[in-house]
Length: 420
Image 1 (cartoon, rainbow, N blue to C red):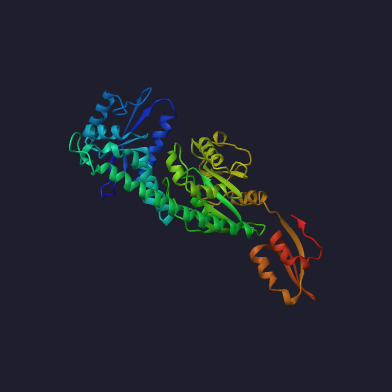
Image 2 (cartoon, rainbow, N blue to C red):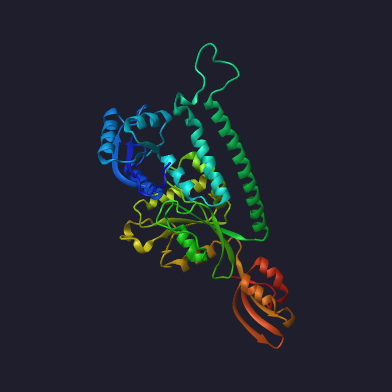
């Protein structure tokens, strides 16, 4: 893991281009991850190969070249843009003379720095232990207290087996604690459904501006920085729509290209908050050349979580930074906004309103003076369009949903509400 030091660490970033994906774009993303972890990408190295070398990932000649770069530039570590085997890490560290980490370890390091809630910390620890477990064998023979041959067998056990047993026990304990958290979240979700609380989830690629939008819409005070995974823990806040309907807005963990499978598994309970939401806002950075791919990555994950049947509104954020609108993505039903300036936010709220599972009604109410306290409920849970004191009470024209309407139905002058 990257260590916090007063002097910023300098890293060599290494990519192996096997043709499986866009290595150049992935390496640029690795550089952003490196900065987010607190290190400086000081040099870049890319090699094209049909497959990774089993011993050092790179070919022997390129591995020597990387060693020369590290020594000449006095770099502190090497970061590989793929998952390395324990053997590859050990061999590379012996060759380079510096720490070697892979893409997964880098992401886990960032997660460990950013997790603030109890559940977030549990999820990070679980992901770390799952990452470490198959790699214990790569730590060499120093862990073993026993050799081979006569006199070495019996009641003793290797330090490696002790470590594995300890990690498995801890993994089981973490799963139990996360299951408890999931059960509590399920109770909260059932309560919301019972109370007809509509949930709207912000999903999308990391650093797309979800937290900035959350702050714009709800004044939530969520940390918003120009970093990948600036916020890791989900945040939920109430948001009132123009029609008066109050919905619950949830900010979820950002996604990433080639996010390792066990990381997705570790954070599945958090991501499932998106899958259970009534409306999904797929936020992307419209100014990024990777915007189309980012939208697709999010949509693919939502499908895998079983959220394919929910209304998804593509939100093209940072539109004020788009240099050529012709090159920007144009998905159906998209809303162009700038969470920073507020541009387009009104259209976004209208799009959410148009996709509400429970529609609102416009009602003309005559509240007796004895029931005028209902006006406060109408202002809080609905939208009061006009109100006027008349001889028989308070005349109120309001926008309400079916739940609120059931509480004021007897005072409706038309006998039933009109669908807005």
